[in-house]
Length: 285
Ligand code: NDP
Image (cartoon, rainbow, N blue to C red; front, side, top):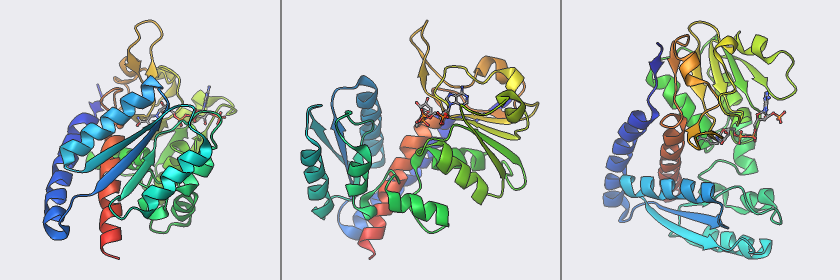
């Protein structure tokens, strides 16, 4: 059985360190970082994610503010809200929970967030800076995955890393961070031919597909490091499960993560870290 990289414990330890940092920032600057979350509509998954973020902020000592808007809100009204928060010197981080209702252009809204308050790292300029290798706010999920790999001392230099999934928020930035760590990176997607042959070459396999237990034991090589980003609902049991068939793969992997309790808590934890970093950058300008 491979070693389980426990995202819950790791994120709890990081949050304890962040709480310490927030205490000292309060002493230095007279206030704590403030994160504002905008939540549009009543999608249960989005509400659950936002609850998790607000809970984590409280644990770390970050002040969170929630702006809840009806699903029928107009794009301009939402943009006006974002602009007002950009102007508010007492707000350090702005997060618009995605997905937004279909009548709203998400890219326009994300681009409207001030670069210095973009705690998700989704602003086009942050994305550009990431790909140019310039200092930027890293997107939380890939950042959290890198922290998990680092926590168990996985040497990435020269290894074959395969990322399954090429979304803007997970797959693509994940590939860039692995590339920066000198891995040889392959990005697979729905058009990849003979996916199992590709994934079996991976020393480090990152699954970000969005399909329950999609990665089976026949798709990984003996001793691979397997990181499961996926969060899916098992249609039979209704329970959360990952993209990786954990029970089948755990015996073959050297290190593996679980869903829930893996990448999810790390993502939220990195959001807290990003909020603190945005606060410090603004304060030390
Ligand atoms: P997207 O739906 O945006 O992207 C999914 C990717 O998987 C696409 O690139 C798609 O390929 C690829 N894909 C789909 N089917 C196949 C297939 N049969 N074979 C190979 N590749 C395939 O999802 P996200 O990146 O946003 O999220 C991925 C998963 O991670 C989801 O389960 C999501 O809930 C979870 N997630 C978890 C987070 C966490 O904190 N733990 C944070 C964010 C997401 P193509 O581009 O060709 O369509």
